[in-house]
Length: 246
Ligand code: ADP
Ligand code: MG
Image 1 (tube, rainbow, N blue to C red):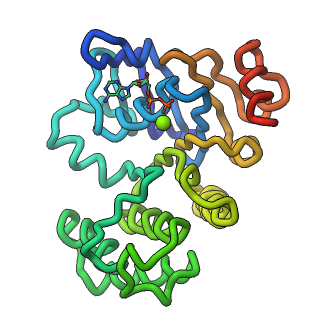
Image 2: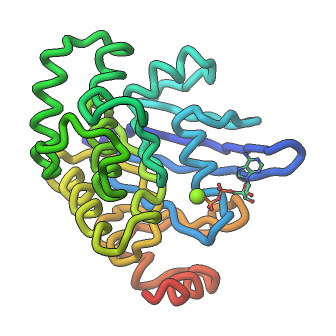
């Protein structure tokens, strides 16, 4: 039995008069990984942000577990606890320690016990090799460490879906692998449902169950991951993969 976690139907999004997303439709089953690929400016971030309620849309529908999302601030506030997102720029609160950053939303928004979340945070920090930085401030951490904290902070909310927007793009090359391993592990061992925007094509080829290839806010290809990287259907996707040295 498969279970759809996210479904998007005929989504159209505008910035002012200009249409950024055109008739986007796809669905994502529980435990699967969807990679959003495409050149810069093709609408990948815009699409991810609409899936998290950070951008509105003009028409179309988004469903979470077969339930159509009514795009009000209140609904999105609830849904954002289930649909976690990590950005290229870590967005940690600079005036809070690592632990305080992680505790904030689970305790304040989800009203969970601080002791329980703290224990869980310690385990998660161990898993990402940062248990000795519990009381550090973000400024004391490297980019790679901050990004690991941002991932832990999102996971501490117990999301059902994780959205990753180029989370390794601003990291030094030697930091990239560690972050990709955490994401791979989330897929392999936690069976986390994920939507990933990345420029790491080898990683995408390994992890993606499905690929959406976007250009100019339109889906040019929707293909199983295995197929996309071996036999991209469109000339545009072939060129794109070549330009990424894949
Ligand atoms: P990608 O993530 O694929 O690089 P984006 O989703 O960031 O692409 O951007 C898609 C298009 O939408 C680009 O042309 C970009 O300039 C435009 N865009 C993104 N955000 C805004 C915004 N807040 N206002 C107006 N245009 C935007
Ligand atoms: Mg982007």
